Image (tube, rainbow, N blue to C red; front, side):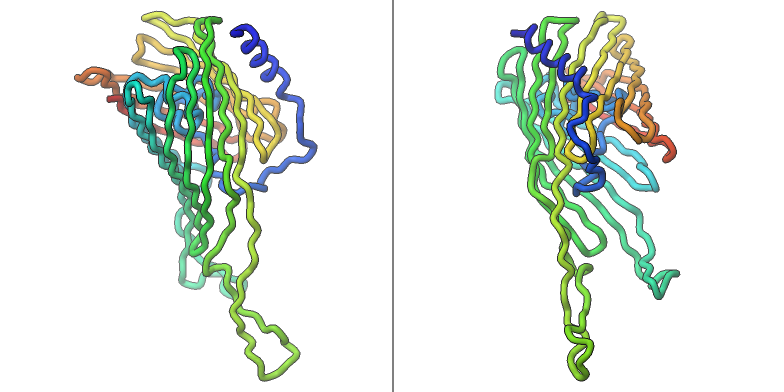
Length: 340
């Protein structure tokens, strides 16, 4: 059984570069911020984390990874995304013993205020506007056996541009299965952002219209609303494997590879590696979007330092990651987490 699952996993990864779509659907979904990966560790490993997820960032990557945690954990990360956009993540996971694991996560993307400009007033009207996206998720996971775990996340998604908003609900589901091969090779899979479409609505889409401009004396300012389209969320299926070919008290090496099948783009592969020394200092590297044409950047890297705390199971983690974005520069990600 384990050998069969391993062969299936390797076959899917090797066969991924074959495109199932003839036309790219980039930019055709709502909630694009949901595709921004979270957590310095996962991002430094190139986003190859669906099978490796075993900390509070599993709330984003694979809810089943929460079942691998032996303690509770709180994780906060921040990055200044492209064009001064701020991207923040806060996740808290609780260990409930035989009842499983419970977690809650908050993801926020915010755009700084900008001047409102019109065709007639290109220097600004004196008003300012901003935009913000938010997702709040509640996760439950549990081990089904000592090798197999499952998890699910229900989340509320909201986008806002000035006075107009769009909101909906989505579901993530995931699994992890640990084998006896290659130092406990683990297979993971997650389906994320399966949910309702988003449609913008609010006072900003209101305008005034003259129903019959040829007729004099009628009201030329009849209030009407633009009809906006509903757009689906960026559904994504991610399948991956991770293994630890070296796992001793002094040294630990973790390698991961993930295959991605998103609804809004072509398929691609992420790969990553992590080296740990004495479970205190870590170096990480990876590459995103292999086999994806026109991808910007791809290289990722980072480091982390873990400090034990003076109570059982206590650990403080200070982490950093860098993600190259090609002609757009790069993104720096910092994070702090505490286990309890």
